[in-house]
Length: 70
Image 1 (tube, rainbow, N blue to C red):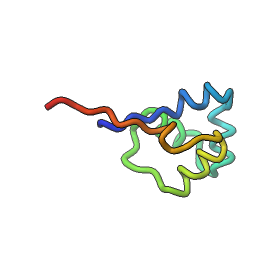
Image 2: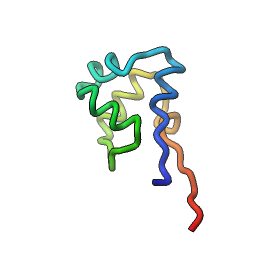
Image 3: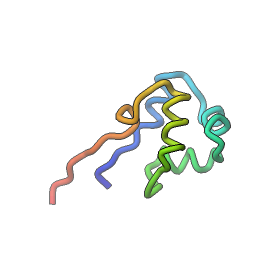
Image 4: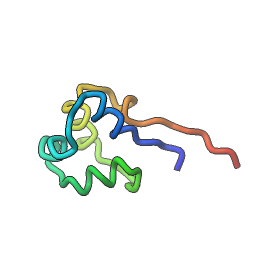
């Protein structure tokens, strides 16, 4: 998938734990893990908003488009 999720990098940069993020957002740690690994097909704007609030970042800090060659 050409969209890369940089959640792991932002958590490390902010020195925050996945467990604390999951609690703040109101989702399970397993869902945070799936999001970090890129195994999700979508994310709700409300969830993205809470993640950005917790990490004090912009959506573009978490998502990156990587062009794929066909």
